[in-house]
Image 1 (cartoon, rainbow, N blue to C red):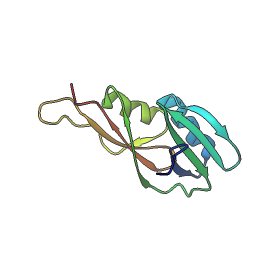
Image 2 (image 1 turned 180 degrees about the vertical axis):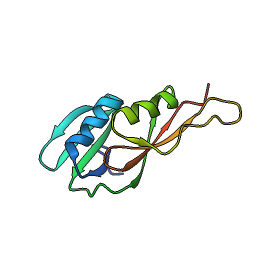
Image 3 (image 1 turned 45 degrees about the horizontal axis):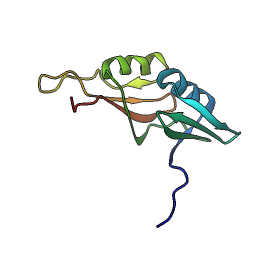
Length: 117
């Protein structure tokens, strides 16, 4: 079995500094590493690597960030310069549990809330 040293997810950004600022301001990301090509951020113990040279196109990433309240989270994404295509919707009489959003560079992300309670 191969020993994994680190797990990270890489996204592309046309403006990597703006993108890093978005994740810092909205999700409390902490910068781990920065050079002219890569910025690595810690978000809740996971590493998001932002690679410069992106084209700013809408791109599905598969990134899901669990937050306490997706309505508040979607508002924070918008306030941070990102987008959410529509307001999170209640489902089966429960508060919203999912918001489809994107960061400042067009990278699509999901916000979810814990539904196990």
